[in-house]
Length: 425
Image: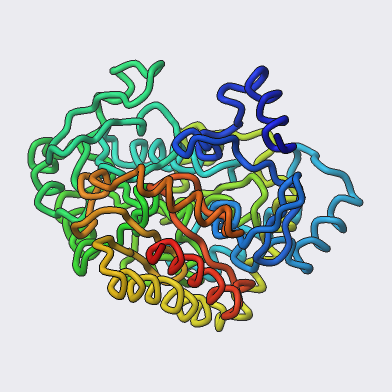
């Protein structure tokens, strides 16, 4: 056994399932997870000395690659003043100003500590602002693990709020309505079923937690129209897409303006952080300015703010990064599509810019139901082949691949060679 196996044996005795987040578990693959020691650029190194090309990117925020020098230096410098104060700091003001000055649909913003907290707080603010209780989410879109959003979807158009986790009382989800991604009629039906009761429609502008499922043309625009028609707020969950698809996130990329937006670890350059923001009149409902209570003792942590602001400023000043990522995405995912055609493999590749995934499904993947039709056993075989050949992927059919600026053309070609090897073996 290697050190990863030894560490996993120790971990399962003290940590549920041996991991501190289920997305790290290799249960579906049938092996112990790789325990990582360090990362640099597009490479990640495990405790056994193995080197991998990494396509997890810490689940998205390492858009400039791991251990980016300017970000690292900003953290080391900030640490010299102390790690945490639990008090107001200048840099959190600078972060808020920078976001609001450069993101047109964010007039005010509140820092929190995770994407889950950002979404939970945005929903509460939306309910407080509108005076309505119900929300609409989409099957297959993940918005964190707060009670109201852990709802099972199924394949029905109007699934009632059934908790998708033990420990969640049904009462917590009774006001959560579930629509079908890329299906505007399902949204309209729910809005008509609960007239003047829906506070918000929340959506991953690009579905990235059922694998990558792009919005069909007109879907996001249709959501904007429906929300305006029914007096409902539109919330974009941009925990994954924010500052990645474009500096203004999916809202800029697709040209659709939400009322509120949520961000996650990318605004901390991978540090534990999140934020929610939007129109001023909505955000002024949040305590202590208004009656919607939300707090976080360590929100706006100076170390996370230093890392995040450094990365965001770099991205703003070097927006050619986004053209580069678009080209890298086309090279990697477009070439994967060609490999599938060449080898007669009846599978699907979905991608939007630097986000992508291969589905071991024979039909187009456009929503949660079609994503769930994937052959997860075949994915496990593919994952093991790639891992053994030095390619580090998320250990699940239903997660995204993330490209960074550190993934060179040579690295992408090496990756494609391993992909081709699997489908021609």
